[in-house]
Image 1 (cartoon, helix red, strand yellow):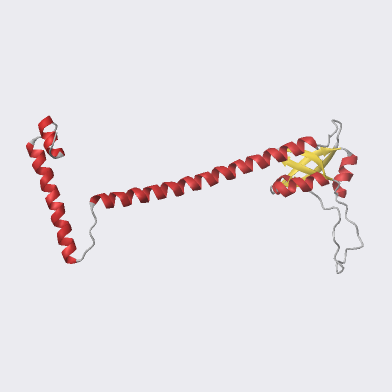
Image 2 (cartoon, rainbow, N blue to C red):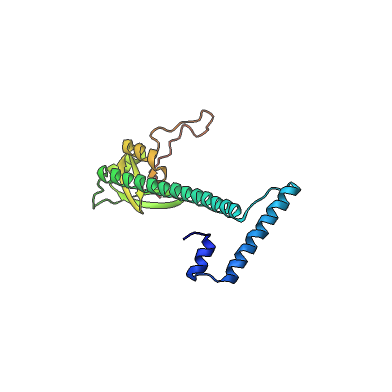
Length: 185
């Protein structure tokens, strides 16, 4: 089987003489274009080079999209892991609220005033800053203040703490009057 690929395809019958002539004509046209471009000083870009550039650009864009999607997935996984860790900490250190808790304690969470019923001892601990309220998945739990600090480092929006020591302003005319935090009306 000697000869060009075109001759071999003609003998097999895959292409006919007309298709062979058309292919030769296209090759001559492309050769003429490149020669004329070289004479005029223009850069010669073959069709395959243009296609290759487009493929490279598409690969580059796909790689960037994939990297961005991977970053988003990693961030979502990290967020889920932090929420699961906070949930586990809350469950381990949850202070039990007795069923006969009759004192309503109001607090704000996400710009909304919410209410939780606690015992009078727990209310005192809340106002003194010894206990804090953790809210996760619309469930409120009482936790010790030290644990609240750990949770606040991981997920600050889920913890409601009252500072144990409030700073007083020397110029405050009402500094001598104590306003209770647990004022009921």
